[in-house]
Image (cartoon, rainbow, N blue to C red; front, side):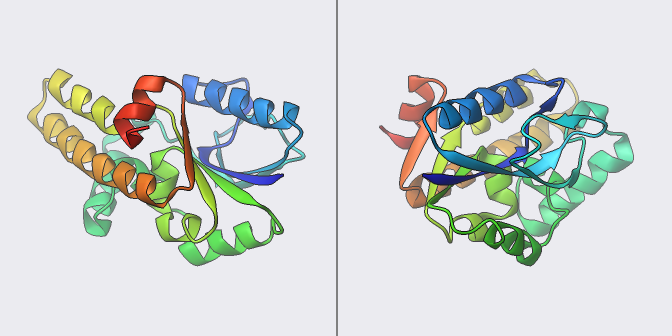
Amino acid sequence: MRIVFASSLIPTLPPDCGFELANRAFVEGLLRAGHDVQLIGFALPDRELLFHDRSHSLGTLDVKTANAGTKQKLSWLTHAVRKNTSFAAAKLDLVSARDFKSRIDALAPFDVIVINGAPVAGAVFEVLTSYPHIYVAHNQEAVAARHASEASAAITEKLMYRREAAQLERLEKRIAKTASSAAAFTSEDLVALFGA
């Protein structure tokens, strides 16, 4: 099967976070199973692409909120509110839906798109869901945002994470309705997100 793996971040070397490690494991599993996998997404700055012959980078981007200055965080938040999307999706809104679609179409023919996590789906939902697709949930992202809100000392962060939780919960439900299949890294997440 020919698969397009669409993710906010495509694996780089050295891996920077658990998300990248999970992406690497998932892609390597697909390759071991004999699938032809092409990856599309952003790469972290100053990193080498792990699957360089299969990766189609949309550019470099540091998506970590902790690494961003106040001006960048406010820009992402303003963009998220203006577009009625999640903070995580707003970070990825550097490529227009039209350009993203043309990049996907250039990878044709393919059988299915793997939507790897809620942020990339939020950034280009209509494009990704216009193709046959499978959703990979890394965790209950809305629950993680809710926990961050509860743990935050600053009222602005509490409100931002509360908004993020609501946005992600709606997005995860939309993805669940459109995906032909879903995968998660824990059975609890699969049941919570998709009732499977």
